[in-house]
Length: 146
Image (tube, rainbow, N blue to C red; front, side):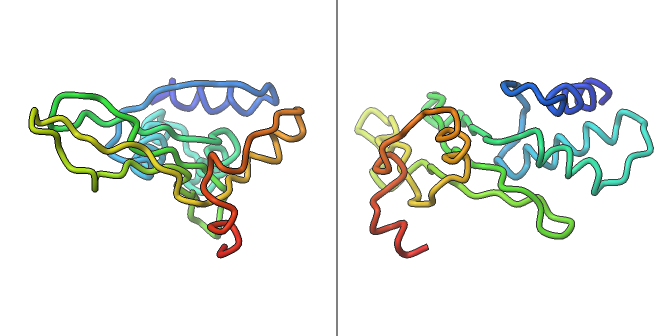
């Protein structure tokens, strides 16, 4: 409860660089869970104010999943884009591709693949002098379709 609110306040102080964990089934559920935890702090904060704080504080959500074979894999990397009306918006940058199936030993053969969406955080990276190959987010042909 209160620690979630403290975390959001600390993340929004203007100092870049925070990392935290939360237990949730999906990236979208992680945002909803964070909202719920802040509400449990007992402060009388409007939901929109909480969502604005989350949108300002959280850039990326890395979803780890324990698969049926017992392994833990990154299954999604989503960017929190901002707000549209009352809704937190996000876009999935990478998603686990389950189509490769399962090995004879029962291990998942899939891997995380780019969705082709260009993350907005690339501009923040560029401002810091960090350049990334466009290919890591999918082909340029994928980007031209956006």
